[in-house]
Every structure is written in structure tokens, then in C-alpha cells.
Length: 233
Image (cartoon, rainbow, N blue to C red; front, side):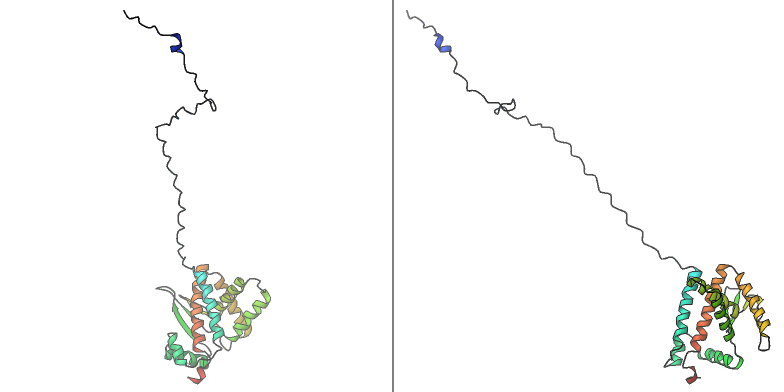
């Protein structure tokens, strides 16, 4: 009969474990747990585009601004009037002035000493101007010396106001009185003061309109009397 061997105590002796070095309390063999939950994507905030500045629409010049431009253009024409033209007829044609009209203006200035021209202001109202005398120029110069305007705008307004009072012959149904060659100087000055007072009572917008028409009239006279007229008429 075979005797069954019993296990020995030494068979249950455990093999000694290798010491484990832990880093911050975590074993290096411990697998890292990676979260499987995807991170929520944060949408980038769109950069607000700066709205484009609206295009500047050029404003229509007012009557006063247009009158100022006309005056500057008129002053330039007065300076250019001293420069002779080589072809007077071509010069008139460029400015849309008929030769017959130029002849009439020259004849009136030479024979009568004054020329008158009418311009429409509205469909029902027209204005009529007459050329100024040299005495009107002297009166304006005296006013400039007495008032000595500091600002150019005031000097321009004074010039237009005096020129209107010296040239406005009729406005609608209103006929303004002018002296003749036999009128005494004191009475002539009194008539000018009456016309000047009438001009100063006009509305500002109407004053600007009349100054535009007067600038057109003065430009016509300056063009016709341009240096070189004697050689052509």
C-alpha cells in the first residue's frame, strides 16, 4: 500500500516581493485613467466688424455760399479784364455772348454812359440792373475806409450791399430812383441812401439771390469791355 506524501511546510513559503517606489503616492505601474468624455468645444466669439462709414454726400451749396463763390469768380474776372485777348469774337463765343449784344452794350456805355439788363428771378418776377458810375466806386471806397472791416466776409457783404444799391434799378414792380446828370450831388447821395435802406430790409435769402444775378450782370459787362474791344468794334 502506497503512502501519500503530505505537503511540506516549506512548499508554502512566499517569494519575497520587490519593493515598489511610489512617486507622489502613485505607483508608476498604475495605468493612467484617461477620460473618454470629449471636451466641449467653445465656439470662438466672432470679431464684430466695424461698420463702414457712410459715404459722404456732397451737400448742395446754399444761396449765400453760392453767392460768395460767384463773388470770388467775379473778382478773378475783373483781374483778367486787364489782360488783352487775341481773338475777341472767339472770346465772346466761349462765353455765350452774341456779338450784337456786345455791340449794344458798348454803344450804350459810350453814348449814354449806362447800360441796363433784365434777368428773371422767378417765373413771375424779374430784376433789372444798370451799370455803376465811378462815383459809386468812390462811395464804396470811402465806406471801406470809414468802417475798416476786420473780417473779409464783412468786407464782401459791404461790397455787395453797396453795389446792389448802386445797380438795382427795378425789382418786380418796385422801381428804384436814380439820379441823372443834372441831379445835385446831395440829392444823388440821398437817393443812394434810400436804395441802400431798401436793400438792407430784404430777406437774407433774397439778398443772396440778387447778389448772384448782379454777379452775372457784372461778369457780362467785364467780358464785353475786355481789353481789346477797341480793335474789334
